[in-house]
Length: 86
Image (cartoon, rainbow, N blue to C red; front, side, top):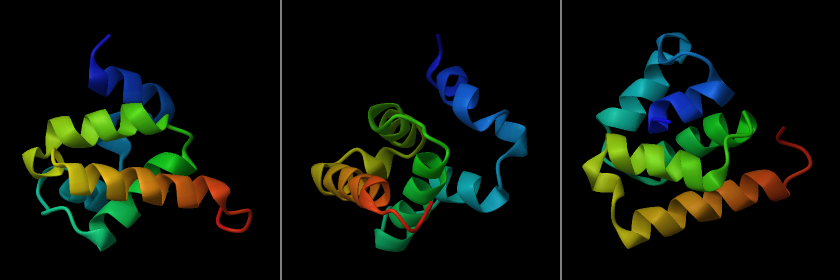
């Protein structure tokens, strides 16, 4: 199964995703606000962490470094640990 198809099982068709998510996923340089926004979207829709990060890394070459990976997984953990944000 293709990576995008696997994520679409959780989020629906890419054509239905908010434009700002697609922009952040493909075009924006990874930063705390970008990663926080993306992780809120994917974690809030129960996409598994590893699958979500693999998609981000595949779509944005700048996301393929250790600092961004750590930030992504940390934000994901914070999202899942919170009882109030869901």
